[in-house]
Length: 372
Image (tube, rainbow, N blue to C red; front, side, top):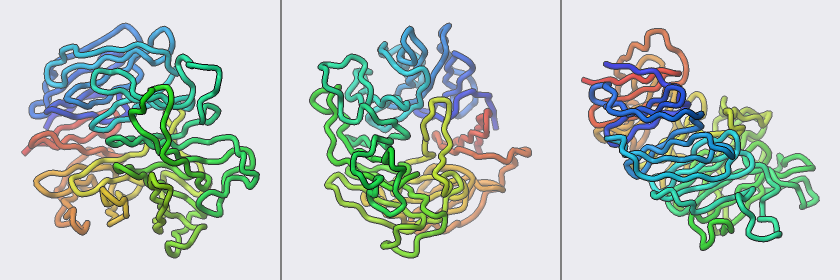
């Protein structure tokens, strides 16, 4: 077993490397040994870190916000690409296997592997004309991306006259309405998003999962589980498709997203759902359990009590639980056994990922590698 300290809010692992941060320094730690393989540092604030395309992506503060971005080879730390642009003073990271980007209340943007921007949503860096971009007067609350789809949840001025009834009866306030826009990650012009469909949804709804052609939101409702798929008052999932259709499923109340509509936000002021992709499911940690969604339809298949997101290993789903690691059948969600783990008094949320034969856990500001 090995351990390293980190100041990063999220756990990033790829290519046998565990990414840790200390102030403005980003380091690649070999998952198998816990030894630091490389480090990269600058004399400015580190705003965020993520990973894709076998690279670590580090976002630093520049002259105009958190817009200086560098990508490094995940194994060696060698420089790959850089970009510099205007950005907000604080950002959260969003990623998929195909895109990495940043989210803040004013804007969302994604980059491809050479760090060229493919789309910007909200306040534009350089407006191409005097006409405002649709949604430019909205406040972004969360975003998720997968393949060619970008989903953005945002509060916009309500022009419907009905307070934003949307897809349920518990509407947003008379002044703003919660929207979820499904759009392309790479429109013909990066500064002109192409929206497939824009949904007006119930107040307090948040993105919790995404597939190639749809996204799923959690609606807190009254904080009591919806009775059935027709119940528009209880807690529920709504699957929103690009063609404008939606499907609803009852959900257990989330401790992370309570009925009062409040959502935890980090320094960037946006909600970042704790999600993890599995071979046969997309998962979301709701605060007390992991919900597994079908990767194509986003139908909720099963839930497992847990203390954080997990990962796949040897055909099983590994989930952190209070007394160890649960080995879960990904077909039906039943727990086959629990591997005891002594977390030495730590009782908070755990993020679990796998690199090779090493199970990596992030416990607060400590990353632990478990082998053997």
